Length: 420
Image 1: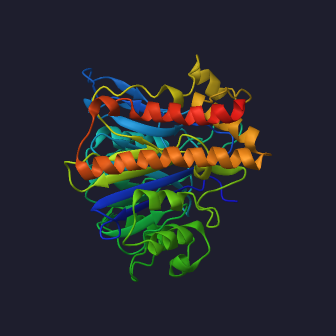
Image 2: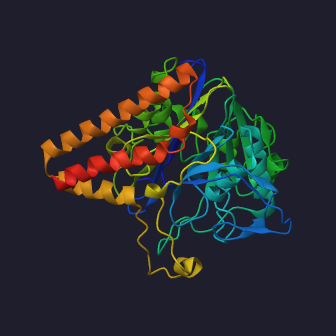
Image 3: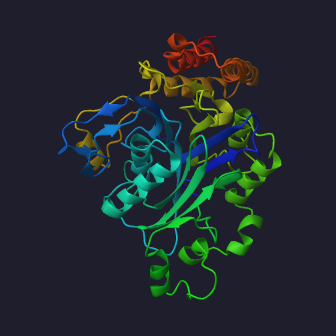
């Protein structure tokens, strides 16, 4: 079982329908970790000397930050995945290779996801934000809450309405690949080989000094910085290869529903079960027509097969997402340091979702009724969102409360199964 085995996908025209870019991610983490879906409005920061407290370290704040919606492990500052008001989406992956992982507290990859979203209005600008912060502050620190100590380097899939970027790191060194059409995915391995569109200025020299590259043959980032045989990368049985096969299977007809089917796929290992499982999922629709809204779907609960993808659209004065926000605790820093104390971070949706699963676990009839009702709710939401994309009509007053209302409707399904 691969720990923290996330998978992130992007599909661009002509692989998609109706000139849309489709982004998707499964966040696979420890089975008892709660992931919340939270919204932070845009903000102006007038105090130029102000510092920003991320998960472990403080960094310089910027004058302005954009509105973001995030799916994140409830104990930390950053995010596993999310989107901003300008249609930028980012998901990250744990990766390992020849470069040693730093255990010292620095920026987590998940902090970099949120920072990229808060500070950039295009995918390439988000890449710039991340690599600049990587150079200045480094990456490192424990990526779990509690007794288990676990650190890793990060790769990122960054998308906007026009293009996507793959950014893969090894310590402070990095390579980036621009994706302008077709399909691309990342998993828990380096995947950039010889198509390198941007890179750390010393990346090749460092590999040469370490003896990972002879300086003569064509430079291959994944081959140099990891132990992969990149010639066999696309024919292995790993999740990276399986994910690519699923994308390729639907190439030319990919919709947001197709992406959800991929995230729900258990035979491929994309929808993970066990000690490490898919704790939350996200799918985004990024229309290339800028007059249309971007739509971001989040589950906020484990196992997308037994969850509802609920839509979120950025409009002014969004209602707070109370039913997917975890409780906050006093003395948070003390909590993090006391490894024997793990607070209850379950938000209202997570609690009802888990209760319903327990009730229907041994009752096939109840399980079927509940799942049918969940799919019915989801299909109705999909119809509404497709109508918005086709008709270009947005009822802003309704959209303000869209995600919270969908969450309440989902909770109602669980409650009716628990009480009946």
